[in-house]
Image (cartoon, rainbow, N blue to C red; front, side, top):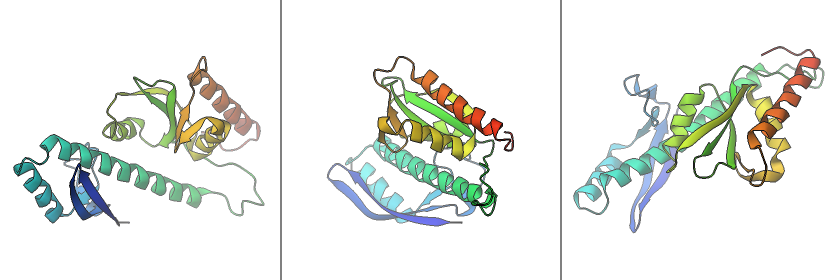
Length: 205
């Protein structure tokens, strides 16, 4: 389902107000599917304003590109998450109070960090890790590195977020500074969850 977003593009003292972007309108075809911004459209008048700023020398083409890359990557990640959460809710057993079975799918839970801050780790979930990292990379000035992954879907991701909540800095990012092996900690916590899941006899991955 298409959704609209209204944003402000700011480049120093230059601003383009009330820019409309739409996600999911035809998804832009398959020609540029590999682009981080795939699936998100921007209104033509805003593009013309951007070109006018570039032509006047107020901003560079690189600044405009990077701003749009970061913006569309954030929108795509949000919409991917909302879509996946909707699918998860549709797949949950009903009523939950009668069946306490935890149900999750084969989506990947992953841990990534930047090359300059390896102890700051994002724990997220995605159907396609490579595509998600590519999307995240467009909004990061430093190289992202995949540190760990396992199948388990949203329940495993939520469990890990709860386990490391005291280390949460913002969103899905956690500070493991001072810990000898953050990846091992994440892996061991995930193993506990997956083992408990298996012992309950729930659907296997």
